Image 1 (tube, rainbow, N blue to C red):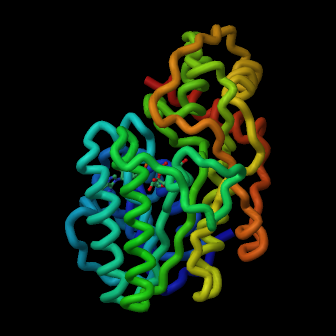
Image 2 (cartoon, rainbow, N blue to C red):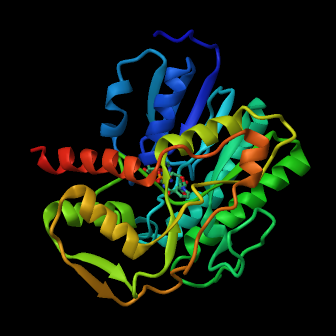
Length: 319
Ligand SMILES: NC(=O)c1ccc[n+]([C@@H]2O[C@H](COP(=O)([O-])OP(=O)(O)OC[C@H]3O[C@@H](n4cnc5c(N)ncnc54)[C@H](O)[C@@H]3O)[C@@H](O)[C@H]2O)c1
């Protein structure tokens, strides 16, 4: 069914990345005009290749650490490498992307009176003392560690969002995203779901850190995008931060075993020392999202993993 075009132009920074490209798909489907801005550091034009010919879609190669002058009605700010391998590759640039990027996008939102949503992260909770994490928890983050460029960068971005809101009345929304997975993740980005799937499909040993008893929760990309769009469309008074994620909790060992079973792989499990600052538990309390946005994840881990395994199987078999 064809959607009715809207007059609205929506800017998606980081739009050629994993989450950003799914968001572009979703916005185009709902009839928005989309301006996708990305410097292609971790994203790829491949992720949006199917949109490039559409008149409602425009791609602009640009680094958000530099100002951007465009006319838009809404901004989703997703630009930032999200996997530890990528954000630790150039940590100074990661902090700049988070902080200067936020300043530039908030400045743009202020100038053109656009509503702006920040893709923040559960990493703002650091290695949490409370479980599951609620939005009112302030977190326990190491300010000088190897992950700090990302964690503290995202925390500072949140500060900027709320100061632009208080000081300049910018219409802001902040979501704190917990581990999300799905098609278009990169095979070599070191995130646990893509790691396990790629290792399983290649028949390589599967690397588990520590004993594999640390837990994570995994949200399928379609659910997450639905939550982000609901947040963007919510009442002006709802600024957030609002947690978005799937509260179902799994140990790394359970995840590895599920991937092995669903992919039919005979890879072996191997155990390695845990990396520094690796949180033991991460699980969202999503009561606020459920109450305010009438949102909760619907896709089960098995269904989401099947889709993702199919994607990686096609990717690894393509020339
Ligand atoms: N995927 C998750 O589980 C998750 C969890 C928490 C938060 N997030 C946040 O969601 C956002 C998207 O994450 P993702 O998983 O799609 O990661 P991704 O790395 O696939 O996407 C990030 C995109 O931002 C682009 N980018 C990076 N630096 C830029 C810059 N300076 N200027 C312009 N573009 C730049 C990259 O090229 C890439 O396309 C990030 O802000 C991330 O912190 C993601």
